[in-house]
Image (tube, rainbow, N blue to C red; front, top):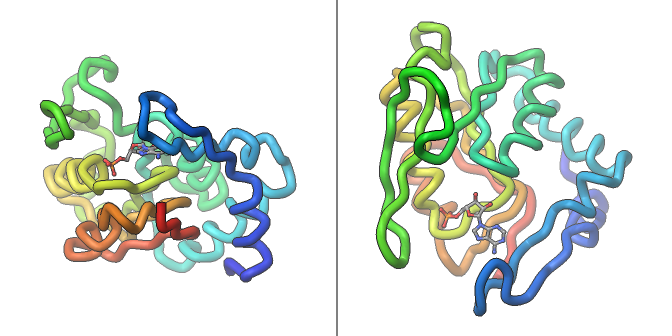
Length: 182
Ligand code: AMP
C-alpha cells in the first residue's frame, strides 16, 4: 500500500535536475531514492503487494531505469524479468516497435522468445517515468505481438501535463505512484 507518508518520502528522495540532458528538461533523478536502502525496499514491497495476487509471470522493464525497478519487483514477485531495449542492443531474434519523438523516431525491441512461448502470459510493464507515453505505448505493442496479457503498466512518476498515463490507460490498466504537474 502506498500511504501518503510513503509517497511523501519517495517524492522527497527524487532529485530534480534542471536542463538535463538538454536545455528545457527538468530531469527527475531517482538515484537518491534507489541508493536509500530502506526507501527502495519500501517501494518494491508496496509494488509487490499491489501485484502479488495477479499471477504475474513476468515483469517487463523499459531501458534503462525500468530495469532497476523491474528486476527488483520481478524478484519480489518470484516472476521472470524481461528487458525492453533500444534498437540493436538485444543479441537474439527480436520484435520491434517504433514511436515518434519531437524530432524523428525511436525503436525499441524485445526478444522474440522473451515470454518462453507462454500463451497469455501475465506481465507487469514498468518504467521509472511516463512523459508523453510514446515509449510505454510502443512497449505495449511489443507485448501485444507476444500475445501477453498486460496486468498493468506501472510507473514511479507521471508527468501529468504530457498526458501519457491517460493515453496508456485507454489501452490497459495504468498506475503511477507519484504524479507531478511538471
Ligand atoms: P515518454 O516516452 O515521453 O513517456 O518518455 C518516457 C521515457 O523517457 C522514460 O524511459 C523516462 O525514463 C524518460 N524521461 C522522459 N522525461 C524524463 C524526465 N523529465 N526525467 C527523467 N526521465 C525522463
